Image (cartoon, helix red, strand yellow):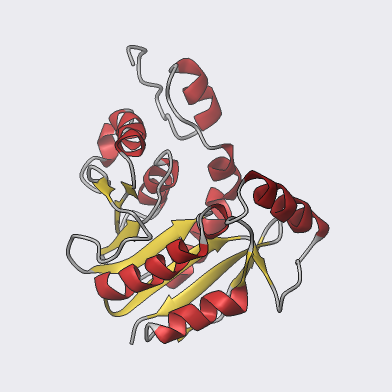
Length: 221
């Protein structure tokens, strides 16, 4: 990337991506970043703390959350070398955040345990429905081993409730996912709660989010 760095690359990430051929941009991050930030501001400590994000995608969430919540060190991760490179491209545009968004680490959610030290929270967005169910089980197991006592596992995305879709949009989305891969699809919130409980987590009240999404919260005793 040879273009000059915008004054604030995160202000309009779509425009930034348009200026840098090859820079990955996930439009959903721009839509959901503020509702997620507001929820995390209530959930996370006000003291300095560390969040490990699993399946960070482009890394835009990592940078936005660190920019917006200055007590956070936000550690991004991805499962492939290509994913790590995509995050590094965004990090290069935000040198002011380099000390609180360290270089991404390679983590496969489905293959715990994950390397690294204990963290205060593990966050993941839009993973459970675009991965086979074992990835969710691995996510919960891996998070349980990486969290400090009292730490939080926070999972954002669309979920079914008691076996039913929460809206027609999610029903259509689920059908499309299953056409693309029969191992994908919306998970039932109760099934994720049960998986977390089996790993010793305490199930906390979930947050209703825009566009029929949920923010599931689990606390390690």
